[in-house]
Image 1 (cartoon, rainbow, N blue to C red):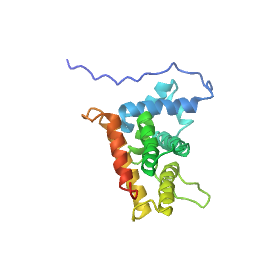
Image 2 (cartoon, rainbow, N blue to C red):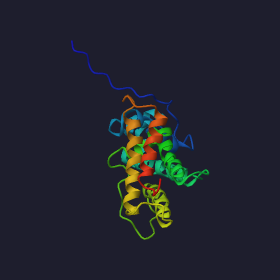
Image 3 (cartoon, one colour):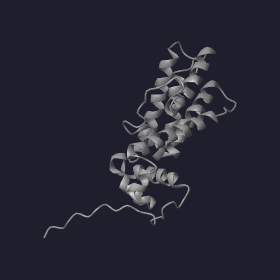
Image 4 (tube, rainbow, N blue to C red):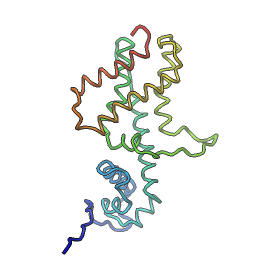
Length: 215
């Protein structure tokens, strides 16, 4: 007799009473982030998230109307953390090349130290879908993160340190170059990478060298 397939189990918290826990929203987001990191966004349902938190699925819908709404919140939060990390950057004494590498390293360290948040922010197609802007709408966290890098490049451009290229193109090229390394290190950990620190340093130095004059 053929064995019936078993349902995939989810580590769940004890069922909580209605109204218990003022941090329920944070519990939902934390559980969702962990499960998405383990299984990918398409392998996670609101039922599984609710089970992991220890609440019913209808209770979860009191906080988030859908899985996509949870992903959207996680997406924006990840970029807020990245913006905060970039805004805290204070360069140490050194050459412009060394300082540029140090700045780009903030981005790399954020991604490698927060791989689940990074996946939601950068590696899930459709996350953070743009909404129609209004005059009162602040920039989305994703755009704020890019604007931090963009402002740094424009400052270098105005000081005459950047090669004779469009600073907007340079900003986007750097953004893509750093993202490519971080996403590969997260998504392909089994690849026979060179020593990580040497790889990161070489990659960022090459990116910065291609941007700065006399670097």
